[in-house]
Length: 384
Image (cartoon, rainbow, N blue to C red; front, side, top):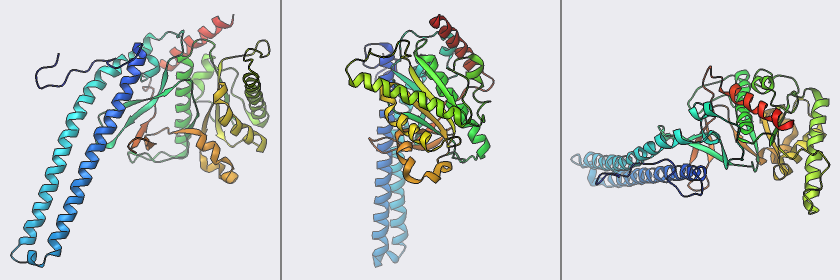
C-alpha cells in the first residue's frame, strides 16, 4: 500500500486482461499512452509559455514609453522570468509523471515473457519452445527526447498484418552518429535476422517457416545464426533463377489459399500442404529481380499477409529509384524499421515523432544460437 500522499507502487500485470500475457500487453500500451499524454501536456505548456513571452515582448517593444527610464528592459526581464517559471512548472509536472513511469518500467520489463522481452532479459535463458502463439511480438523500443530514461517496448500484434522493411539506406542516426553504407547493410541484415529469430522462437514447432533470398550472397555472415542452426526451410537462395523459383512458389501458395477461402473450403488444399506461416526475407533488392519478379513481390506484399505469407525486405529504397512510382505502393505497404535509432515513427493520437531503437543482441552473447538450436530440435521432432 502507498503511503499517504504518495503514488501507489506499480505492479507488473496491473492491467485488465484474461491472462498475464494480455495484462502485460495492455500495461505496456498503457505506459505508451501515458508517456504520450504527459509529453504532449509538457510541449503544450512550453509552447504556451513561449507564445505568451513573445506577445509580452512585442507589446513592450511597441510602447514608446517603455524606452524611457529602462522600463523596456524591466518588461522584457519580467516576460522572460514568467516564461521560465511556466516552463519550470511544466517540467516539474513532467518529471513527476516520468518518475512514476520509470518505476513502472522497472517492474514490468523483468516480468515480460520472451516474445515481449529484450534479448538481454533472463527469460530467454529459460526459453522453451511454446505450445501456443503469443499475442504480440517485440520489434524494438520507443522513446521521446523529453524522456530519455524510458524505453517503451514496441509490440506488434500477431499474426503480422503487414510486412517489414529494414531500411539499409540511412547512414546517419538520430543521435548524430554516422555509419558508412557497408556497415549499414550489415547492421540491417543483422536486425532482420534478430526479428526472424524471434518470430521462429515464439511460434510453436512447425508453425513458422522462413525463406531467404540473398541473390549475391552478401548477407551470408549476418545469416549465419539461421543457417548453422538449420532453422531455414532451405539454404538462402542465390541468383536470378533462385529468385524466380522462390517467388513463384510463394505466389502460387497465396493463390491456392485464397481460392480455398473464397470457395468456402479452407480444408480443400493439396495433400501435404504446409499450413504454417511463411516469412520471406529479401536482401539486396532489386539485385537479381526482373520485372516479373518485382510484380510478384508487390503481389506478396499486398495479398500475402491475409493468408499467412509475410515479407521482410532489407533494402535501400534509393537503389530501386529506376522503377519510379511503380514501387511506391510496395514501400507504403511495409512497416519501415531502421537498423540504427531513428525518429521516423509517428503515432496517430498526438502526432509525436517517436525514436525507434532496433533490438540489440548483447555483444558476445550466444543467446540467438541457443534459442534457434532449440527451435531446430523441436522442428525435427515435430517432422518425424
